[in-house]
Image (cartoon, rainbow, N blue to C red; front, side):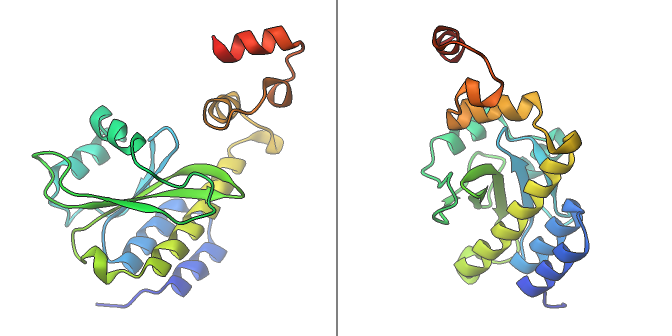
Length: 192
C-alpha cells in the first residue's frame, strides 16, 4: 500500500480547490475514513465508503447529515471552537448500528469555527495516528473549507445564511452584520 504524507496533502491543496479530492487524500494520510461537515452538520464531503462496515456512518453519508441524536451528542462535547487549541473527542460506539469509534474535531481558521471533521476508526487504531498529523490535516481542511465558503459568495460578500450562522454562533452584533439601526430593534431581533 502506498504511503501518503501530510506533505502530499499540502501539495494537492496547492494544486486544486477540489474539497472532495483533498478529503480523499486526507483519509489516506489518516488511514481511516474521513468526513467533513459545516457548522450546521451538513456534509461537505467524505472519503470513499466502499470498505466501510459501520451502518451508522453509511446511513449518515446516504442522508447527507448526522442523526439528531448524534448532533445533540456532539453539541454536548468540550471542543475548541476558536482554533487556539486542537481538541478532539473520541466517541465509543454511538448506537447499536455503530461498532466503530469516531474522532471528532473542529475546523477553525482565524478564530472562526468553520465546521467539523470526523474520522472513523475502521482501518487504523486512533492511538497509531499522531496528534500532529491530525492537527495538520485539520489545518489544510479548514483552509480549503474557508476558501470554498468564500468562493460561493459573489464579490466576496456574505450570504444571509453566513450572517445568520455568525449571529447564532458568535454573537456578532446585528449593526455590524447587516446594518440594522437602533439599539431597541437590535435587542428585539437578537432575543426574539
